[in-house]
Length: 338
Image 1 (cartoon, rainbow, N blue to C red):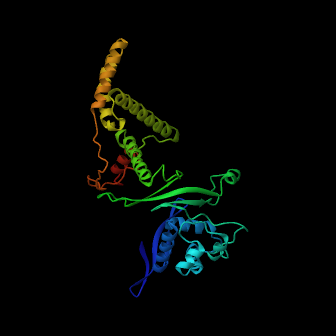
Image 2: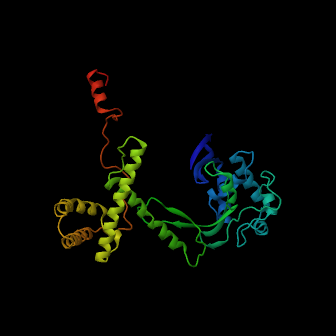
Image 3: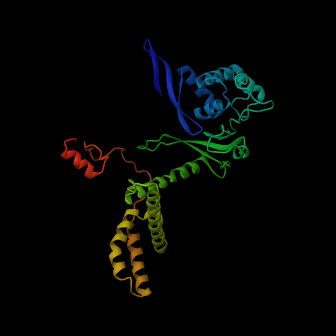
């Protein structure tokens, strides 16, 4: 949160980033308004982004900040005391806000159809674990009207907050959204562990971009770029297949085998395979067994809590980028233009 304006040394407005329909945007409010919005989130078991997403889905004609301020005002007008909160149904076990309470929360500002209800603000499944219904957002341009009409008005999901206490980790709070609603079968800790396992996807992308040197595409036309991408994907899948076969042959987990080590092993075996390709199948099978044994010997340690500084080791070189063909640049150097 950053100050937006100062007057007499006192911060008047504060900016904070929120997420609406998957897009990050900023909202500027007074500190007291942020405190009130945080209190609403605590009572309803929601995040600020989910509350703001609901307000945004109902907003008509007014600015976003004005709609948030009116929502906060009418929320606390509907329940100015603790008994009033209980009577209005804020917080507690019963989380659905009725149309009557919705009128206090801003239906004059946000007209709705008769008999409509505001979204479910969540039965609690435990601490930092609740069910919430997300309203259908306005129709995006990427979906046709017929498909948009077939989508449900609300999507019932589960939101879990998990606090990361591991020293050295940059992320301190993770919010996992899932359709696995059974808290007994799928605990919050299980979901957090599953979310953490997705980090393997980031490591796989790193293997494609760095180990296979796909971080820079060298082709110039769209057709050749697509061929270049598919060639890298094909090579990646073939390498992973060999790693899986080596892991199955030696009864180890595929994730414990080094991807870079497998590439180096294949490069070392390539001349021998090419030289002995005309031998009989028994020799080729024996050679392949030796290849799998060498691949399985390149193991990586299990370091789940490893962390590294997000800094570049090599210093930046102060040269301009080569944005023209090399021969044209040389001609410009001869003419003294560069």
